[in-house]
Image (tube, rainbow, N blue to C red; front, side, top):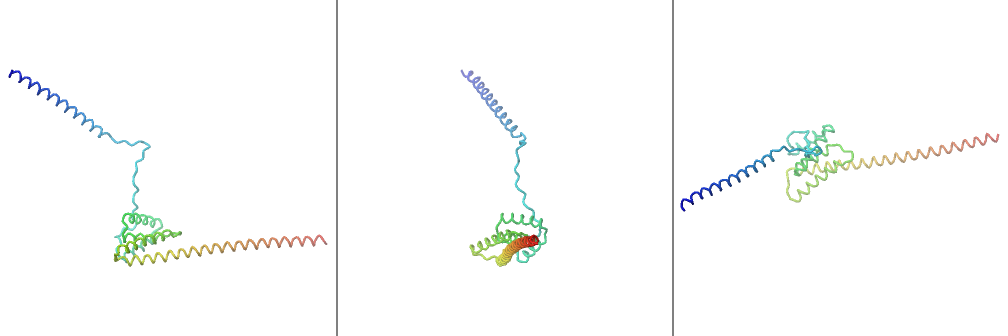
Length: 212
């Protein structure tokens, strides 16, 4: 009986080993299949578009960031001397920076850039006022006084004065346009009266000629 148990134990061991070997082979096959799946190249359909984020605008003026009243005024002067195209490029770069971080320095730089870029409709000046008012309200809310607070007030007054001048110019242009329209209407009426007078005179002359 003892001799019979030994072969049975060996048979059981061999059976378990075969099952384990089969499971291991199956597991390796699965792993190999997954590896092949992950190794497959990623293809993009013809009509499928890969979305790429917009490239941030690049600065035209690459000097150090202004951090005091003098450097801010120097920056404003530098922007003022740029061409219209480069001014627009610098404005977009500064606007992106202000959106990312709305602190007092970014606000001053943004407002001065808006002031330096010509805009016949005054939208840049209006936007600059809104930016500076937002900063002033934030300073008052936090009851903190930055070394640049006087500069904020100075630039706000400067932008406000420019905006008021812009509004006055609009009123003057509107008044001049209305005046020109009135003059044109008067000239039109005068020419019409002259035409009537000429017609009446011609009739009178014709009547006298017939009576003779």
